Image (tube, rainbow, N blue to C red; front, top):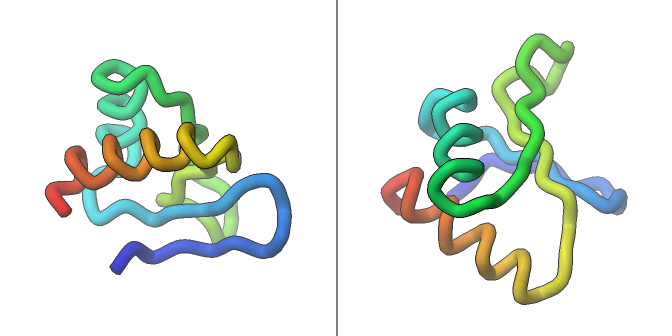
Length: 71
């Protein structure tokens, strides 16, 4: 199970089990996926902001995220 929050906007927030900066870096470098770390933001510190894309883009994101998080 992935801790997340989605409230009807064009993004979702995900709290990775790993260090957020490391997950962010690996998504960028290993998979070419850009996300935004919410480090230091009240209430959402430690989350990644993931913009919702096409179905194919989201499948690609989840595949890369699962590999990085070891799920």
